[in-house]
Amino acid sequence: MSEAPAISKQEAAAILKFYAEAGVVDLLNDEPIDRFEVSRKQLEEKRAKRGNVNPALSPRVAAATSRKSTSPRLTTDKPAASPIQAASTNITVPDQEKIDEARALAKSANSVDELKELLADFKGCNLRQGAKNTVFADGNPNAPIMFIGKAPGRDEDRQGVPFVGPIGQLFDKMLAAIDLDRDKSYITNIVPWRPPGNRTPVPHEIELCRPFAVRHIELIKPKLIVLMGNVSTQTLLETNKNILSLRGTWAEYDVGGKKVPTMPTLHPDHLIKNPASKRNAWKDLLAISARLKELT
Image (cartoon, rainbow, N blue to C red; front, top):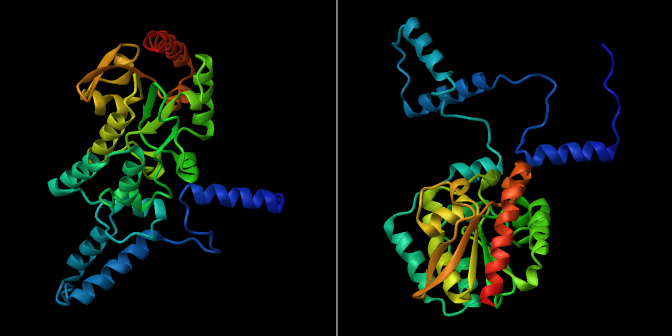
């Protein structure tokens, strides 16, 4: 058997960084570890401590019990989870009281800065546990156009700014294509904390964050709103329709009794994964640009 080629320290560091970001928590040992056997022993120890092991069990029953305990679907003891796995499983579904608290807090904000502080102090959403930053907004709060996405990704969570990294680079190009930039726009998300693994926020997380997003819009008072992707579109327009069927179609969003033109369009993340969709996004951008000129 040929020896594996040597790698440099830089290459080794890059590999370890990749594994860490992927959620790998165990390094390789010299001998393989039978995780099912480890789980079985741990389960037996727990049962013994609780007094659930009956010494009178026949060998056949004991063997059957042992087989059940090693089933992947029935085993309750698992190897230590990564921080991301722990955050994703330690979810507490909020009750109505917690949702009412979010609504009351959001409604009490009289300015964008006050809303930002209240949101940073709000501990009712489980996503805070795994997030590094509360990603509030970016751009110019006095801009006539407001872009709303779903939730921060890894790069946004690290920097505390929405739409950065590869997604942000494409987003900036989209803005530039219609003579906009971050100084002429205001950018935020429905959910201000990164979901573990960049998954889509679940309904109770969206419901907790919705009051802050709604109040955010009311305080900014944009002349035009752009909803980027499914989460922001379905949340604010209160629809179950998919973004692919809604994009490019004008809607209206009520801001303090005023109907604000609202355009659902494709999220930059979708465009990166589906380059062919850029053609439709370009059509939406042209419509957005034309409407914005009418309003300003």
